[in-house]
Image (tube, rainbow, N blue to C red; front, side, top):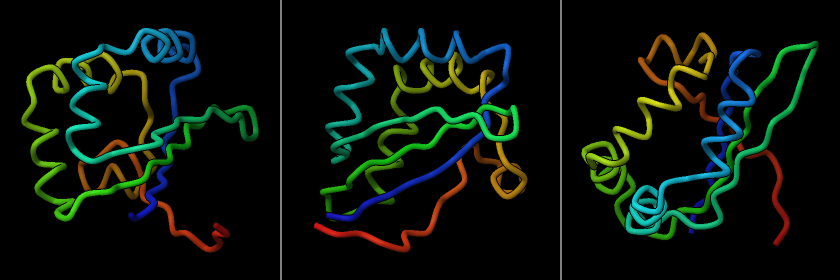
Length: 112
């Protein structure tokens, strides 16, 4: 199992929308997340200097992360879901440079 964390901004006027979408997550999207070997997926919201940010954490239990993420990105329901969530987010500069929404984070400490 490998742990992953990432961060992105969220548009201040879209925080309520983002929360609403995740309070009503689509069952097909949740199923695909599990099929792609992602467990314990959480997203947290934090205001820093008056700006909202999202922090995500999940555990990957599969053997081929690249293939599983490809399976997710080609899933029709997941792509539709992202069309609703992506416009609410404000990627950090490093993510924007890579054409991504979320910026990867380095794990510096863990205790089991």
